[in-house]
Image 1 (tube, rainbow, N blue to C red):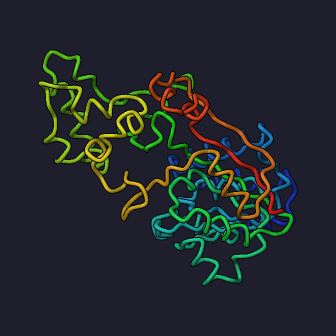
Image 2 (image 1 turned 180 degrees about the horizontal axis):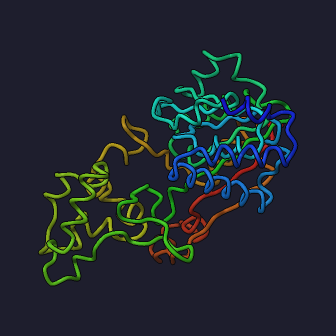
Length: 327
């Protein structure tokens, strides 16, 4: 294994960790290496904002909660964590890069946080740092999950949470229609067929791509509701507007026709909490918020959403980053 060649993490110097990371990254497939390098840069960016520091993870035990394919887990490994435990409730370690799961100091387990505490008591305790990236917006029982994480931290430990805001232009995760672009703007990904001479035909390729690659975003029922005679009532037109999840709230069920978009129902994937609600949940779980940062887009919110009582600050917050201590 890699460890037998480069030594134990908990006794390595900064230079030895750098060399060790260089060897590890060089062993990865190009696409995986680029992903991990990108994740390292994201963590370094958090450090530049004062949200994270090497003292929180270097030579320490880190939990990557809902780790997905493990990019951030590997990044913490490269940056010198002594032990990284990656848990995810749906990703099977068998599909994670083999170079990750072969590492002695990097452990992958398919489990929820609650089951991790229940079934892996030897591992699920005394973490120096718990990290979660765009996880908390998907958790239905968020108060319960936060209490669970709080119990896994050392008294001197920290929790770093990156939360994706539902109230941003693409906060519904309707990324087939809206996604991050240049100059901190969230950009339309489709085709303005309502302005084209051939109407629906102009967006055919985009709709077909959505049905194939993102079936939760576009389906046969929505396809049947297209109306080139009245584009304003067409679900494709509505979804093509920024903040569509808020602007068309009265027609939400018809416009966002998939269980994943519905609130607190079977198959739902978003809890739709506000930034303030997240702070309240963190505090009630016992965390102390030490630092907070809003990442914001440059899109201009519609006046009717402001008139409805939503603030420009919340509407332009794409993600929020929280550094918390246990006490």
